[in-house]
Length: 125
Image 1: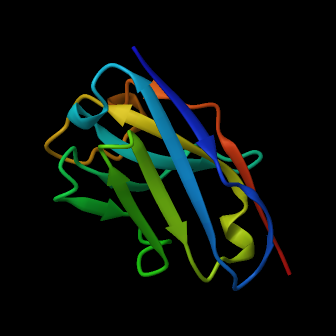
Image 2: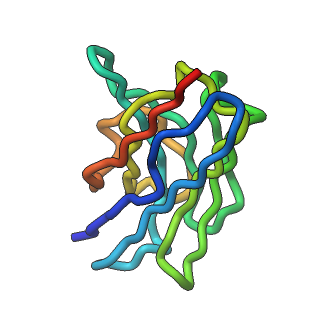
Image 3: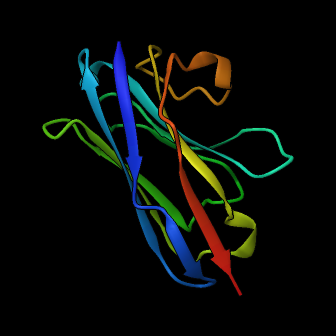
């Protein structure tokens, strides 16, 4: 089992930045690919960014490419999502997830085995 707890969400203005954190406990964090997803009201959960176990490969949704950066610190069992130039459409609950496919970055929710509860990000004009 892997337990995931997100933090860092909040209410921010468009154009500003926010950094989300996801702290993991339980089984070996470093053996998992980690992903960030988001879900807005009335919409399906969508992939945002992912990073392989070593940090050597990252992958981003087109909607956030160039604005968001995913990173991880295996010594701290934590994965981060730095979000810059936030837009109104970035408003959602952000969830981190762990995937056993540790040498690639899956985008499908079914490929992730463990999920956090999520943290709310609200971007205002």
